[in-house]
Image (cartoon, rainbow, N blue to C red):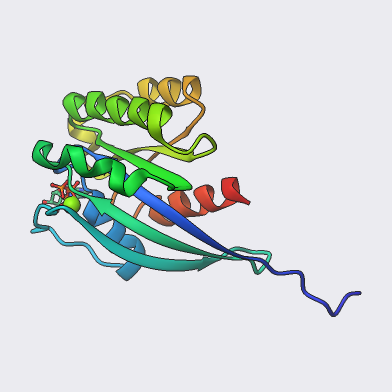
Length: 174
Ligand code: GTP
Ligand code: MG
């Protein structure tokens, strides 16, 4: 009946992957604390944070976020963090073609070794630096479409599309 609200609470293991310096830690800091750190330090190993969001229908989604280290020396640790993850955020920097190549490497790795039903997002970060763009939006959109993932451009600096990124992931998990 009308007085009974039908709410759901979801817990989601989410992993961020991508080249060093693309802004993974800044995306997480923006999402969890609403802050931006222009002097963000490289991540060592990985770091863990969690954040809960409420969707319009009163469903809550708790993200348990593994922010991995992008430096090559940590690449072998990645499976520890993406194993069993329900969602993966693969990040590149829109000013860096190398980082877009690296993102494609991570997508392939997740397709081979991630959960078969993992929700993947391809994220072009540093969208505020559009004057120095060197990865066309269309290249990312097409790549994402071919690989059954969604793509979005974000800026951890201005907060553009950060909440939208996590909301879209939540919707796709429901
Ligand atoms: P690793 O931990 O080494 O894998 O790097 P990371 O991907 O976590 O990068 P991090 O978040 O530490 O950011 C690297 C640098 O990019 C820092 O100087 C940030 O301030 C800067 N940065 C991150 N996001 C943005 C953004 O959206 N716009 C701009 N202009 N700079 C950003
Ligand atoms: Mg980091």
